[in-house]
Image (cartoon, rainbow, N blue to C red; front, side, top):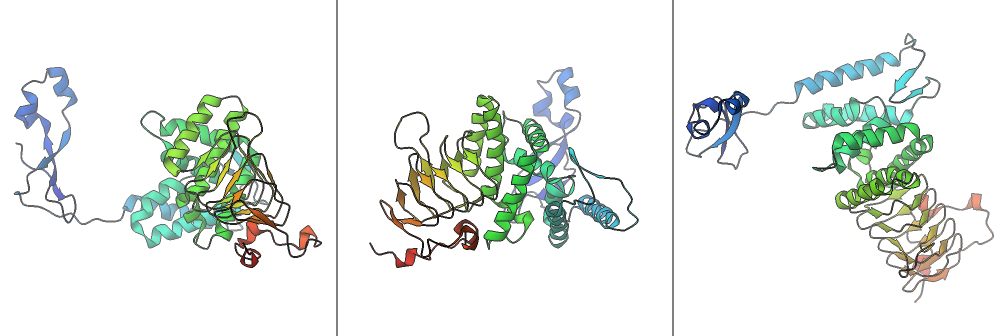
Length: 370
């Protein structure tokens, strides 16, 4: 074997050593290799040594290159805030954002990423690649989704092109992305920052990927839409048919096990917890899935079946089985669900709290008697 050029432990409990050796010195790989193959192996290759050899521990250091780039980005952001900054416009990905209309969510998200990278150097490279290096929220989200959903045959470069082009050309989708991330930040106490919500909350990521699949479905590109749906289901455990329509300001809290059928409709400012099903009642085609209004709250493991209507501001109790229409601002609870009218049916909509925004799971349900 060739002499060791560099050694390092793979971990504190590992007995294997990682090293680089000159391939031409390895008799077992040169004896049967032609001259053309030898030229391809002129570099160094990785191998493993036995645990008897003396180990040399390498101390990990923060990514200095990423730290320098982060400092450079921070300097540019600070300079852009000065009165002397006289650019006519700031280019954000595929669209130009005028200084009079700054993208506050993106600015806050980027600032949080810089702060977190300084507090945790081990995340500096990740935060730089996922957020800080990008000119817009759309590009950053496209990059992150592409890397999450890619596999050996559906490449990240292809997905990045698909996501970034779709986000850049659809202004309604841009609004929905921002409304969704605000919903997570405002309604979920566990979401402590925009960075945490965008990078780590699979309900948010699954919803944004679905928006792209739904657009493809509307364009008649059903094969790609269904392939994307399959990857979303495999990666995030969220199964939303690309034909389903979803409004903005939607929160999929925890999101694991959520199933939404093809003809389902979800309104604006809706909050849905894990293991919720919006499904059909048989094998009939056509309109066969629930229609959920604005500001609705659907508790964990609730099942809504058939082409029923759930009115604005309604609440569905956890583990309920809903087979009938739910009037606006009422509560459905039980198996099968029964309707509890709102305490003040005559109050105007403006004076009512929307449970989808307040996340009030228990009021009125506590008074329910089976």
